[in-house]
Length: 323
Ligand code: PBG
Image 1 (cartoon, rainbow, N blue to C red):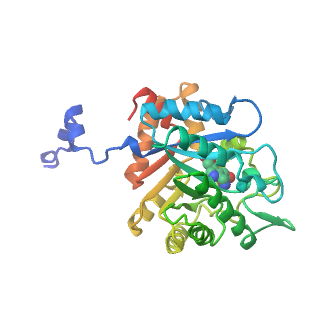
Image 2 (tube, rainbow, N blue to C red; image 1 turned 30 degrees about the horizontal axis):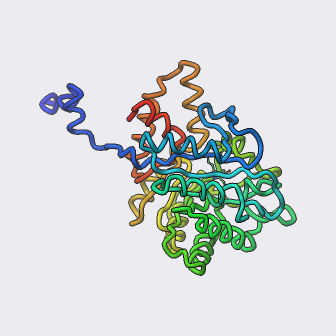
Image 3 (cartoon, helix red, strand yellow; image 1 turned 90 degrees about the vertical axis):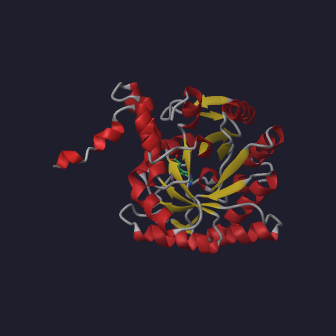
């Protein structure tokens, strides 16, 4: 009889369910992103990302300190400079907004682990992640700027640098530059399998980094490809990546799983802006319960194989005691 095997026995009550649960989430492995601005208001809400603000360095310190008291020990920083140009000078300026933010955070909270996004798009007048010439994003000349940016972040005290540009060879260029500057102990978390995605829409509003022409499909991955994600992560690991990332997360759970199975380094997943905004919008409209959505989504990402997750939900999770 089929009813001799009754899987429902292990679902009869919460205690039994907890006892046999296959996935448990370590909230310590959540990373909270922040947008820090050089100019403009000290705090400005981001319309498409309810609950997330663009903040001055002063307010970043305040937010990170309150979060740290709740237990959020990892932050990822994005900078929004006062001025943009065609060489992304703000990205690697010693007194750039991220560099100053890192120094301020590390001097106030030495125990906070600060990860910096290494990219040029927020600092480029055209919004692309590399140097543009004749309408094309140039790979090799961009590497030097990315390397300078990473070194400047690490010199400011960043614990981990995270290149998100998707130029070929950037992990090796950054590793070399860090080592040459004596920063041999700064790990690289590479956005290794980063797909061109509509889910970045709200982020580009937040960071003011939407490309002014064209799109990012000549450097970010095509969502139809999975084998290519394996190639990208293996290349990055060969070049010296210490942690590899899959991004976005939700439409790419299969990629997280594949990557987890083929690499022997930690795997990070980025639960990106559009994934966050959809949840916020559905909750606001009363279409679904926010807590249950967030719990299920984060559980799914960890179950797929992520060792750590970057999520805008992190603060809500800690504040409300979710997960
Ligand atoms: C910068 C960068 C982006 C994101 C992280 N780093 C935007 C992009 O590639 O267009 C997206 C993060 C998010 O959507 O939450 N290159």
